[in-house]
Length: 483
Image (cartoon, rainbow, N blue to C red; front, side, top):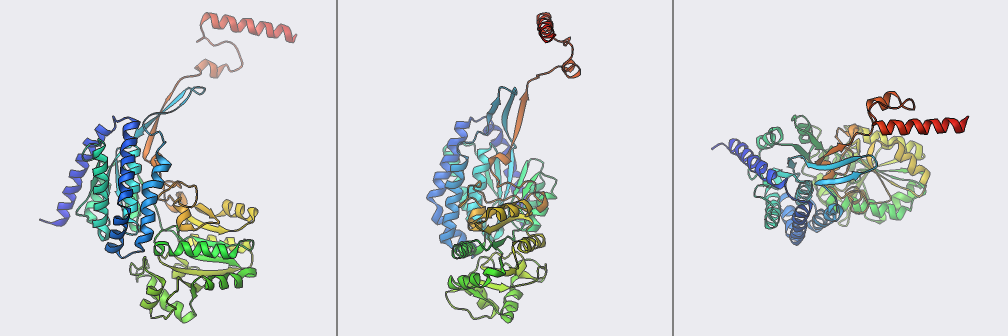
């Protein structure tokens, strides 16, 4: 039979099962839900190395050792952050305002999984979906199908062991574009949680189904003159080489001030960065993007040495990052765009004000709304950047790849980072269970129409006789005292 038709039917079957399962799951108590989420966290942690190696072998992206840390962040870091959240039943009661808030699951979450962070994203999305009371159907990236399916199976077994109904977690085992479209547009899909390429995210928002999507990152890192240059460089290189740069929050360029330019360059070289000359920059730049202007998958998650060799450039064997000094920011300049590998653009500006403008220019070129980093000890400059930068996360004195996902900051641990309206996203949050649930509010009346009409005036006709009489007595006494 036709593979596309089979995949579409598979999606319909998964959604049918998920709908039944979620109907049962919606009756579970907070304690039952929390027990399921905890068991998934424990089980995923047991398999963190296996899944990391599997993802690395199947996709060829990054380093399995770093993928272990990402799996651990998804399994343990996310769990620690969400475990005490109230997500079902009465989650808040304001007795003064007379409002009761009730957590209501959305239904079925369509979880679109990228090839860059496949296993960690599955763990994360399944855990936050179930914590919010939802069912979830996973749509794997075809290039990471096996490791995604394996991760899902581990989570399914753990959830069902603790009483989750069968079908609550589903995974498409024949991933096709048609299957993903069917999942996104199906009437039983409540929300799309999309992490991946720009085209896929746009498709999610165009599907007619509510969606939370993430656009490309292209965050600059500004090293301001008051920064600890050695530490700033260490953080940037640690970040850009972590899993060979596949996290979209990682730095894509460095911007610094002319007064410390030489110090920054010297420290970058000392810590393993290689500055390309113009001819070498052109060679490397020519393989970063495809003819259609999109990032080449051949360079994603590869080492700096591998990329240099691919471009025909000879670099030392211990090179960690390739850097190209640039003056122009444009869509045609690959060094001023997102590069999910250890390659950076480098810009020098006269002062922090012009550096601020340069960072905005880079973000507006690509990655607006996502993330950027500043390394500085000047609180006034940091605050100015926070006020002016069109990003959802301004990371201060930290490694962007790890700070953006909440590993080295106190942001919500997440592998879906909202870019806000300016970035074409429906939220600027690091996505958590709170983004995957609705809140029903029971609001008690506290006023009558006559109260609104006669505020501060005569007694309301809706009052009981005793209340009205008492009010008149109080007013009479007050008038006598004032006279």
